[in-house]
Image (cartoon, rainbow, N blue to C red; front, side, top):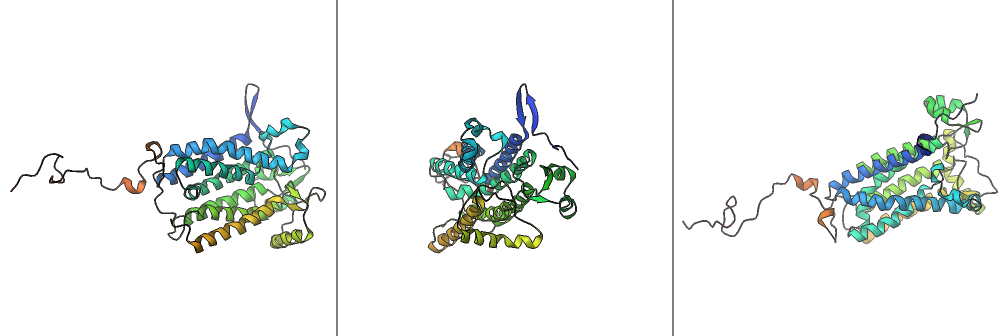
Length: 344
C-alpha cells in the first residue's frame, strides 16, 4: 500500500513566498512558552515586557545555536552547499544546540537586568518544555526525525494512533516510529511534573530548571536510539556497550534501535550528552544543597538589583493586600495628612 505525503509542508504562500508549517508550528510553540513564562512571572512582579524582550533576544540566539550545533556535526553535507546552511525551514536544528544558545543569551540578559539566572530560568523551564512539545510537530509535518521501521499494526493496534499520524509515518516505502510523538508526550508529562514540583516548599532556586534538564534528558536518551538520523561519532567499544546496556530495557516493550550507519558513527551524540546532563544536573543539585549555596527557595520573592519601573509590576500575592496611605506624625490614620489632631 502506498501513501502520498499526507500533509503539504507549505501551509500557504504570500505571492511567491511559501510559508511553511514548520515555521508556523515553531512560532506557536514559542508563543505558548512565552505565555507560561509571563503567567508565572506575574506572581513575582516581573512584567511581561521583560519576558518579551527576553524572547526577542533569546529566540534568534536559540535558532543560531541550534543550527550551528546541527551543521557542525553534519558538515560533510553542507561544506559544498553553504547556502543550505541557512535553510532552516527544511529542518535540521538541534534542541540541545538551541538550549546552549538560549542559556548563553539568558546569562547575559538576566545579568544586564539584575536578576538571578537561576530564579528566572526556573520560571522559564515549563515554557521551554512547551516549546519543545509543540515544536516536535514541525518534524512530523516535514517527515523528519522519525524512528526505525515498524509494522503498520504496531501503530494502529498497539499505539492506537489516528490515521493522519499513521499515514504521515509512511516514509520511503515503510512505516516508522513516530518519535516526534514520543518526545512530545514526554514533554507534556514534564510540564505537569514541573508545575507540581514548583509549588513544593522544599524546592530551592535553580532546582526546577535542573529538574527540567534531568527529565528531558531521560526521555531524549531512550527516544534518540529509535531514530535513524542521529548525529553520531565513533567511540570506544566499552562506551558503546555501556550506552546500549542502559537502553536495553526498551526491548522489553518491543522497541528496537533505529539503524545507525557504522561508517558515520556508533555513538549517538544526543544520547551521550543526555547522560552527561543527567549526571551533571543531579550532582549540581546535591553540591548546591550540601554547600548551602541556594539560600533562596523557589517560592521566595524575586528582586532585581537594577529594578526599573518598566520591568516591575505589583506581584499577584500583594495585589489583594490593603494599602494604607502614609500619614504625618500626630495625624489620625483616616485623617488627611497635615491636619494635626487637636489637644483634648
